[in-house]
Length: 458
Ligand code: MN
Ligand code: MN
Image 1: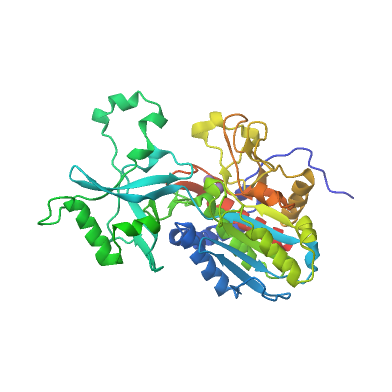
Image 2: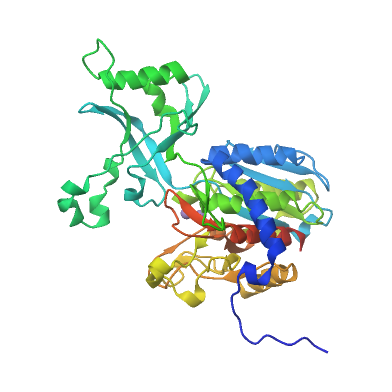
Protein backbone atom coordinates (compact mmCIF):
# COMPACT_ATOMS: atom_id res chain seq x y z
CA UNK A 1 0.00 0.00 0.00
CA UNK A 2 1.44 3.33 -0.92
CA UNK A 3 0.74 6.48 1.06
CA UNK A 4 -1.74 8.99 -0.33
CA UNK A 5 0.13 11.36 -2.61
CA UNK A 6 -0.22 15.05 -1.91
CA UNK A 7 -0.94 16.61 -5.28
CA UNK A 8 -0.77 20.24 -4.22
CA UNK A 9 1.99 22.31 -2.61
CA UNK A 10 0.97 24.59 0.18
CA UNK A 11 3.09 26.44 2.72
CA UNK A 12 2.20 25.75 6.32
CA UNK A 13 3.46 27.38 9.48
CA UNK A 14 5.73 25.79 12.04
CA UNK A 15 2.82 26.16 14.49
CA UNK A 16 0.60 23.99 12.25
CA UNK A 17 3.21 21.52 11.09
CA UNK A 18 5.67 20.98 13.91
CA UNK A 19 3.55 21.35 17.02
CA UNK A 20 3.84 22.79 20.49
CA UNK A 21 6.96 20.91 21.56
CA UNK A 22 9.05 22.29 18.70
CA UNK A 23 7.64 25.77 19.29
CA UNK A 24 8.66 25.56 22.96
CA UNK A 25 12.15 24.45 21.89
CA UNK A 26 12.28 27.39 19.48
CA UNK A 27 11.53 29.88 22.25
CA UNK A 28 14.25 28.32 24.41
CA UNK A 29 16.78 28.29 21.55
CA UNK A 30 16.06 31.97 20.89
CA UNK A 31 17.40 32.89 24.34
CA UNK A 32 20.89 31.71 23.36
CA UNK A 33 20.62 33.61 20.10
CA UNK A 34 19.68 36.85 21.89
CA UNK A 35 22.79 36.56 24.07
CA UNK A 36 24.91 35.92 20.97
CA UNK A 37 23.58 38.84 18.96
CA UNK A 38 23.85 41.28 21.87
CA UNK A 39 27.50 40.30 22.28
CA UNK A 40 28.26 40.32 18.55
CA UNK A 41 27.47 43.68 16.98
CA UNK A 42 30.51 43.66 14.69
CA UNK A 43 32.26 40.89 12.77
CA UNK A 44 35.16 41.06 15.23
CA UNK A 45 32.83 40.55 18.16
CA UNK A 46 31.06 37.73 16.32
CA UNK A 47 34.43 36.02 15.83
CA UNK A 48 35.11 36.34 19.59
CA UNK A 49 31.74 34.68 20.29
CA UNK A 50 32.52 32.04 17.66
CA UNK A 51 35.85 31.24 19.32
CA UNK A 52 34.13 31.02 22.70
CA UNK A 53 31.49 28.58 21.40
CA UNK A 54 34.11 26.59 19.48
CA UNK A 55 36.51 26.22 22.41
CA UNK A 56 33.69 25.28 24.78
CA UNK A 57 32.89 22.44 22.35
CA UNK A 58 36.50 21.23 22.20
CA UNK A 59 37.57 22.89 18.95
CA UNK A 60 41.18 24.06 18.90
CA UNK A 61 43.10 26.55 16.76
CA UNK A 62 44.28 25.25 13.39
CA UNK A 63 47.48 26.25 11.65
CA UNK A 64 48.30 25.44 8.04
CA UNK A 65 50.19 22.16 7.89
CA UNK A 66 48.71 20.69 11.08
CA UNK A 67 48.09 16.97 10.96
CA UNK A 68 44.52 15.81 11.29
CA UNK A 69 42.52 12.63 11.79
CA UNK A 70 38.90 11.57 12.16
CA UNK A 71 37.25 13.19 15.15
CA UNK A 72 39.54 16.25 15.19
CA UNK A 73 37.83 19.59 15.67
CA UNK A 74 39.51 22.80 14.57
CA UNK A 75 38.81 26.46 14.13
CA UNK A 76 40.73 28.94 12.00
CA UNK A 77 40.50 32.53 13.21
CA UNK A 78 41.29 34.70 10.18
CA UNK A 79 42.59 38.07 11.37
CA UNK A 80 39.90 38.26 14.04
CA UNK A 81 37.29 39.04 11.37
CA UNK A 82 36.15 35.70 10.09
CA UNK A 83 36.25 32.21 11.48
CA UNK A 84 36.06 28.75 9.92
CA UNK A 85 35.20 25.76 12.12
CA UNK A 86 35.70 22.25 10.84
CA UNK A 87 35.37 18.73 12.15
CA UNK A 88 37.01 15.74 10.49
CA UNK A 89 34.64 12.86 9.78
CA UNK A 90 35.29 9.14 9.56
CA UNK A 91 34.35 8.75 5.90
CA UNK A 92 36.83 9.19 3.02
CA UNK A 93 37.57 12.90 2.53
CA UNK A 94 37.10 12.48 -1.23
CA UNK A 95 33.38 12.15 -0.51
CA UNK A 96 33.40 15.89 0.12
CA UNK A 97 32.69 18.31 2.93
CA UNK A 98 29.36 19.55 4.25
CA UNK A 99 29.70 23.34 4.47
CA UNK A 100 27.46 26.09 5.78
CA UNK A 101 28.50 29.68 5.06
CA UNK A 102 27.01 32.71 6.81
CA UNK A 103 28.27 36.26 7.11
CA UNK A 104 28.86 38.18 10.32
CA UNK A 105 29.21 41.75 9.04
CA UNK A 106 26.12 43.97 9.02
CA UNK A 107 25.26 47.38 7.55
CA UNK A 108 26.47 50.20 9.78
CA UNK A 109 28.32 53.54 9.82
CA UNK A 110 32.13 53.42 9.87
CA UNK A 111 34.20 56.37 11.03
CA UNK A 112 36.28 58.09 8.36
CA UNK A 113 40.08 58.12 8.92
CA UNK A 114 39.98 61.84 9.84
CA UNK A 115 36.61 61.95 11.58
CA UNK A 116 36.75 64.58 14.30
CA UNK A 117 35.71 68.24 13.82
CA UNK A 118 34.02 71.06 15.61
CA UNK A 119 31.17 73.13 14.19
CA UNK A 120 29.10 75.84 15.89
CA UNK A 121 29.50 74.65 19.46
CA UNK A 122 29.27 70.96 18.71
CA UNK A 123 31.82 68.23 18.03
CA UNK A 124 31.15 65.56 15.41
CA UNK A 125 32.63 62.40 13.89
CA UNK A 126 32.41 62.00 10.11
CA UNK A 127 31.15 58.61 8.93
CA UNK A 128 31.26 56.53 5.78
CA UNK A 129 28.37 54.10 5.60
CA UNK A 130 29.08 50.37 5.22
CA UNK A 131 26.65 48.25 3.21
CA UNK A 132 23.18 49.11 1.99
CA UNK A 133 21.63 51.38 4.58
CA UNK A 134 18.58 53.63 4.34
CA UNK A 135 20.23 56.72 5.72
CA UNK A 136 17.21 58.39 7.32
CA UNK A 137 16.73 55.37 9.62
CA UNK A 138 19.90 56.17 11.57
CA UNK A 139 18.92 59.65 12.74
CA UNK A 140 17.75 60.74 16.20
CA UNK A 141 18.43 57.50 18.06
CA UNK A 142 21.03 56.30 20.60
CA UNK A 143 24.13 54.92 18.89
CA UNK A 144 27.16 53.04 20.18
CA UNK A 145 30.78 52.98 19.04
CA UNK A 146 32.49 49.60 18.60
CA UNK A 147 35.86 48.73 17.17
CA UNK A 148 39.60 48.80 17.39
CA UNK A 149 42.34 51.36 17.17
CA UNK A 150 45.74 50.03 16.18
CA UNK A 151 48.47 52.27 17.47
CA UNK A 152 51.70 52.87 15.60
CA UNK A 153 53.54 50.35 17.78
CA UNK A 154 50.98 47.67 16.92
CA UNK A 155 49.07 47.84 20.20
CA UNK A 156 45.40 47.08 19.61
CA UNK A 157 42.97 49.15 21.67
CA UNK A 158 39.44 47.78 21.89
CA UNK A 159 36.76 50.42 22.20
CA UNK A 160 33.10 49.96 23.11
CA UNK A 161 31.14 53.03 24.18
CA UNK A 162 27.38 53.12 24.57
CA UNK A 163 26.41 49.57 25.52
CA UNK A 164 26.34 49.85 29.33
CA UNK A 165 23.41 51.71 30.87
CA UNK A 166 25.83 54.21 32.41
CA UNK A 167 27.78 54.83 29.16
CA UNK A 168 27.23 57.94 27.10
CA UNK A 169 25.75 57.24 23.66
CA UNK A 170 26.20 58.98 20.33
CA UNK A 171 23.57 60.64 18.18
CA UNK A 172 22.84 61.96 14.68
CA UNK A 173 20.56 64.97 14.57
CA UNK A 174 17.47 65.11 12.36
CA UNK A 175 15.59 68.03 10.85
CA UNK A 176 12.57 69.30 12.76
CA UNK A 177 9.31 68.95 10.78
CA UNK A 178 8.58 72.65 11.32
CA UNK A 179 11.48 73.53 9.00
CA UNK A 180 11.28 70.54 6.64
CA UNK A 181 9.07 71.91 3.88
CA UNK A 182 12.03 72.09 1.47
CA UNK A 183 13.21 68.61 2.37
CA UNK A 184 9.73 67.08 2.07
CA UNK A 185 9.71 67.84 -1.65
CA UNK A 186 12.94 65.94 -2.31
CA UNK A 187 13.38 62.24 -3.02
CA UNK A 188 14.92 60.14 -0.24
CA UNK A 189 18.39 60.02 -1.82
CA UNK A 190 18.60 63.81 -2.07
CA UNK A 191 16.96 64.45 1.29
CA UNK A 192 19.45 62.34 3.24
CA UNK A 193 22.97 62.74 1.80
CA UNK A 194 25.74 60.58 3.29
CA UNK A 195 27.80 63.58 4.37
CA UNK A 196 25.07 64.58 6.83
CA UNK A 197 25.52 61.35 8.81
CA UNK A 198 27.76 63.06 11.36
CA UNK A 199 27.91 61.71 14.89
CA UNK A 200 27.47 64.21 17.70
CA UNK A 201 29.99 63.48 20.48
CA UNK A 202 30.34 66.66 22.54
CA UNK A 203 29.37 70.27 23.20
CA UNK A 204 31.34 71.33 26.30
CA UNK A 205 34.46 73.43 25.81
CA UNK A 206 37.66 72.85 27.74
CA UNK A 207 38.47 75.79 30.06
CA UNK A 208 41.20 78.11 28.91
CA UNK A 209 41.31 76.88 25.29
CA UNK A 210 40.25 79.23 22.50
CA UNK A 211 40.49 77.11 19.36
CA UNK A 212 38.77 73.72 19.02
CA UNK A 213 38.02 73.67 22.72
CA UNK A 214 35.15 71.14 22.44
CA UNK A 215 37.15 68.89 20.16
CA UNK A 216 39.97 69.00 22.72
CA UNK A 217 37.52 67.87 25.40
CA UNK A 218 36.56 64.85 23.27
CA UNK A 219 40.22 64.05 22.64
CA UNK A 220 40.94 64.36 26.39
CA UNK A 221 38.20 61.81 27.10
CA UNK A 222 39.58 59.38 24.52
CA UNK A 223 43.13 59.86 25.74
CA UNK A 224 42.26 59.36 29.40
CA UNK A 225 40.12 56.26 28.75
CA UNK A 226 41.88 54.64 25.80
CA UNK A 227 45.31 56.24 25.58
CA UNK A 228 44.77 57.43 22.01
CA UNK A 229 45.28 60.71 20.15
CA UNK A 230 43.67 62.10 17.00
CA UNK A 231 46.21 60.51 14.63
CA UNK A 232 45.31 57.05 16.00
CA UNK A 233 42.03 57.31 14.03
CA UNK A 234 44.19 56.88 10.91
CA UNK A 235 44.69 53.19 11.67
CA UNK A 236 41.38 52.22 13.20
CA UNK A 237 38.19 50.35 12.44
CA UNK A 238 35.48 52.07 14.42
CA UNK A 239 31.83 51.34 13.74
CA UNK A 240 28.66 53.12 14.77
CA UNK A 241 25.82 50.72 15.54
CA UNK A 242 22.48 51.06 17.35
CA UNK A 243 22.98 51.17 21.13
CA UNK A 244 19.99 49.10 22.21
CA UNK A 245 19.79 45.37 22.84
CA UNK A 246 17.67 42.66 21.23
CA UNK A 247 14.08 42.50 22.48
CA UNK A 248 11.16 40.11 22.19
CA UNK A 249 8.44 41.52 19.94
CA UNK A 250 4.71 40.83 20.18
CA UNK A 251 2.49 40.01 23.13
CA UNK A 252 3.13 36.35 22.31
CA UNK A 253 6.90 37.04 22.25
CA UNK A 254 7.06 35.20 18.92
CA UNK A 255 9.54 37.58 17.27
CA UNK A 256 12.84 39.30 18.05
CA UNK A 257 13.96 42.75 16.97
CA UNK A 258 17.69 43.39 17.01
CA UNK A 259 20.52 45.06 15.18
CA UNK A 260 22.31 42.79 12.70
CA UNK A 261 20.01 39.80 12.22
CA UNK A 262 21.41 39.94 8.67
CA UNK A 263 23.26 37.68 8.90
CA UNK A 264 24.01 36.69 12.47
CA UNK A 265 20.56 35.09 12.57
CA UNK A 266 22.04 32.48 10.21
CA UNK A 267 25.55 32.53 11.70
CA UNK A 268 24.30 31.42 15.12
CA UNK A 269 22.26 28.43 13.91
CA UNK A 270 25.12 27.46 11.57
CA UNK A 271 27.72 27.30 14.31
CA UNK A 272 25.44 25.73 16.93
CA UNK A 273 24.20 23.14 14.41
CA UNK A 274 27.78 22.18 13.57
CA UNK A 275 28.70 21.85 17.25
CA UNK A 276 25.51 19.89 18.04
CA UNK A 277 25.86 17.39 15.15
CA UNK A 278 29.00 15.63 16.31
CA UNK A 279 27.60 12.16 15.55
CA UNK A 280 27.98 12.55 11.76
CA UNK A 281 30.47 10.63 9.61
CA UNK A 282 31.03 13.55 7.21
CA UNK A 283 33.75 16.14 7.43
CA UNK A 284 31.83 19.31 8.21
CA UNK A 285 32.59 23.01 8.12
CA UNK A 286 30.96 26.22 9.26
CA UNK A 287 32.20 29.44 7.67
CA UNK A 288 31.42 32.79 9.28
CA UNK A 289 32.71 35.42 6.88
CA UNK A 290 33.14 39.16 6.69
CA UNK A 291 32.55 41.76 3.93
CA UNK A 292 29.41 40.21 2.43
CA UNK A 293 27.60 43.52 2.66
CA UNK A 294 30.24 45.19 0.48
CA UNK A 295 30.72 42.43 -2.10
CA UNK A 296 32.72 39.72 -0.29
CA UNK A 297 36.07 41.15 -1.40
CA UNK A 298 39.29 41.18 0.57
CA UNK A 299 41.24 38.86 2.84
CA UNK A 300 38.31 38.27 5.20
CA UNK A 301 35.57 38.05 2.54
CA UNK A 302 34.21 34.95 0.84
CA UNK A 303 36.16 35.72 -2.34
CA UNK A 304 39.46 35.26 -0.51
CA UNK A 305 41.35 32.07 -1.38
CA UNK A 306 41.23 31.01 2.28
CA UNK A 307 38.38 28.56 1.68
CA UNK A 308 40.16 26.74 -1.13
CA UNK A 309 43.47 26.89 0.75
CA UNK A 310 41.82 25.19 3.71
CA UNK A 311 40.14 22.55 1.58
CA UNK A 312 43.49 21.89 -0.10
CA UNK A 313 45.17 21.51 3.29
CA UNK A 314 42.43 19.21 4.59
CA UNK A 315 42.53 17.06 1.46
CA UNK A 316 46.33 16.83 1.65
CA UNK A 317 46.38 15.97 5.35
CA UNK A 318 43.83 13.20 4.89
CA UNK A 319 45.27 11.74 1.67
CA UNK A 320 42.51 13.04 -0.58
CA UNK A 321 42.45 14.96 -3.86
CA UNK A 322 41.44 18.60 -3.44
CA UNK A 323 39.56 18.80 -6.76
CA UNK A 324 37.61 15.66 -5.90
CA UNK A 325 36.84 16.99 -2.43
CA UNK A 326 35.44 20.24 -3.86
CA UNK A 327 33.46 18.45 -6.58
CA UNK A 328 31.78 16.27 -3.96
CA UNK A 329 31.23 18.96 -1.34
CA UNK A 330 27.91 20.61 -0.69
CA UNK A 331 27.29 24.06 0.73
CA UNK A 332 24.31 25.77 2.27
CA UNK A 333 24.83 29.50 1.84
CA UNK A 334 23.02 30.53 4.97
CA UNK A 335 21.87 34.09 4.49
CA UNK A 336 18.66 35.92 5.23
CA UNK A 337 15.89 36.62 2.76
CA UNK A 338 13.00 39.10 2.83
CA UNK A 339 9.88 38.04 4.70
CA UNK A 340 6.63 39.04 2.99
CA UNK A 341 5.47 42.30 4.55
CA UNK A 342 1.72 43.08 4.25
CA UNK A 343 2.55 46.78 4.66
CA UNK A 344 4.62 46.70 1.47
CA UNK A 345 2.82 43.87 -0.30
CA UNK A 346 3.26 45.40 -3.76
CA UNK A 347 7.00 44.54 -3.97
CA UNK A 348 6.47 40.83 -3.28
CA UNK A 349 5.07 38.04 -5.43
CA UNK A 350 3.11 36.26 -2.73
CA UNK A 351 3.20 32.73 -4.15
CA UNK A 352 6.99 32.85 -4.23
CA UNK A 353 7.64 34.97 -1.16
CA UNK A 354 9.04 33.88 2.20
CA UNK A 355 6.14 33.89 4.65
CA UNK A 356 6.60 34.53 8.35
CA UNK A 357 6.42 31.43 10.59
CA UNK A 358 6.57 29.06 7.60
CA UNK A 359 10.06 27.89 8.51
CA UNK A 360 13.51 28.35 7.03
CA UNK A 361 13.57 29.79 3.50
CA UNK A 362 15.39 28.29 0.55
CA UNK A 363 16.23 30.46 -2.49
CA UNK A 364 17.23 28.46 -5.55
CA UNK A 365 18.61 31.67 -6.98
CA UNK A 366 19.12 35.27 -5.88
CA UNK A 367 20.42 38.12 -8.07
CA UNK A 368 18.34 40.60 -10.04
CA UNK A 369 16.73 41.11 -13.44
CA UNK A 370 17.07 38.04 -15.63
CA UNK A 371 18.78 36.07 -12.85
CA UNK A 372 21.86 38.28 -13.13
CA UNK A 373 24.57 37.64 -10.57
CA UNK A 374 23.37 34.34 -9.20
CA UNK A 375 24.81 30.84 -9.24
CA UNK A 376 21.26 29.35 -9.42
CA UNK A 377 21.46 26.00 -7.66
CA UNK A 378 20.72 22.96 -9.80
CA UNK A 379 17.42 21.12 -9.53
CA UNK A 380 19.48 18.12 -8.40
CA UNK A 381 20.99 20.08 -5.49
CA UNK A 382 17.60 21.51 -4.48
CA UNK A 383 16.10 18.02 -4.73
CA UNK A 384 18.84 16.61 -2.51
CA UNK A 385 18.35 19.30 0.16
CA UNK A 386 14.58 18.88 -0.11
CA UNK A 387 14.86 15.20 0.74
CA UNK A 388 17.32 15.94 3.55
CA UNK A 389 15.01 18.50 5.18
CA UNK A 390 11.80 16.54 4.68
CA UNK A 391 13.25 13.34 6.12
CA UNK A 392 14.32 15.31 9.21
CA UNK A 393 10.87 16.91 9.56
CA UNK A 394 12.22 20.45 9.11
CA UNK A 395 9.59 23.06 8.24
CA UNK A 396 10.93 24.94 5.22
CA UNK A 397 9.70 26.94 2.28
CA UNK A 398 11.03 28.00 -1.08
CA UNK A 399 11.06 31.64 -2.08
CA UNK A 400 12.40 34.54 -4.10
CA UNK A 401 13.37 37.89 -2.58
CA UNK A 402 10.61 39.94 -4.26
CA UNK A 403 8.89 40.64 -7.55
CA UNK A 404 11.01 40.15 -10.67
CA UNK A 405 12.49 43.47 -11.82
CA UNK A 406 11.65 45.29 -8.56
CA UNK A 407 15.16 44.92 -7.17
CA UNK A 408 17.37 42.11 -6.03
CA UNK A 409 20.29 41.04 -3.93
CA UNK A 410 23.11 38.56 -3.70
CA UNK A 411 24.80 36.33 -1.15
CA UNK A 412 28.06 34.40 -0.83
CA UNK A 413 26.48 31.44 -2.69
CA UNK A 414 28.02 32.23 -6.07
CA UNK A 415 31.53 32.51 -4.66
CA UNK A 416 31.25 29.01 -3.20
CA UNK A 417 29.65 27.66 -6.36
CA UNK A 418 32.48 29.15 -8.43
CA UNK A 419 34.82 26.74 -6.60
CA UNK A 420 32.87 23.81 -8.09
CA UNK A 421 30.93 23.28 -4.86
CA UNK A 422 27.17 22.70 -5.19
CA UNK A 423 25.58 25.54 -3.21
CA UNK A 424 22.07 26.70 -2.45
CA UNK A 425 20.83 29.61 -0.34
CA UNK A 426 18.83 28.83 2.74
CA UNK A 427 18.24 31.08 5.72
CA UNK A 428 15.90 32.99 7.96
CA UNK A 429 13.35 35.48 6.62
CA UNK A 430 13.76 39.04 7.94
CA UNK A 431 11.40 42.00 8.10
CA UNK A 432 12.87 45.53 7.82
CA UNK A 433 16.10 44.06 6.44
CA UNK A 434 19.12 46.42 6.78
CA UNK A 435 17.22 48.72 9.16
CA UNK A 436 18.94 49.52 12.47
CA UNK A 437 16.46 47.12 14.08
CA UNK A 438 15.48 44.12 12.01
CA UNK A 439 12.78 41.61 12.87
CA UNK A 440 12.73 37.81 12.76
CA UNK A 441 10.44 35.01 13.94
CA UNK A 442 11.69 32.64 16.63
CA UNK A 443 10.23 29.57 14.93
CA UNK A 444 11.89 30.48 11.62
CA UNK A 445 15.22 30.85 13.43
CA UNK A 446 14.82 27.46 15.06
CA UNK A 447 13.95 25.76 11.76
CA UNK A 448 17.21 27.17 10.36
CA UNK A 449 19.06 25.45 13.18
CA UNK A 450 17.16 22.21 12.56
CA UNK A 451 17.85 22.51 8.82
CA UNK A 452 21.61 23.00 9.22
CA UNK A 453 21.79 20.14 11.70
CA UNK A 454 19.89 17.89 9.31
CA UNK A 455 22.28 18.91 6.52
CA UNK A 456 25.37 18.00 8.56
CA UNK A 457 23.85 14.68 9.61
CA UNK A 458 22.16 13.59 6.35
MN1 MN B 1 22.99 38.91 4.27
MN1 MN C 1 22.55 42.19 3.86
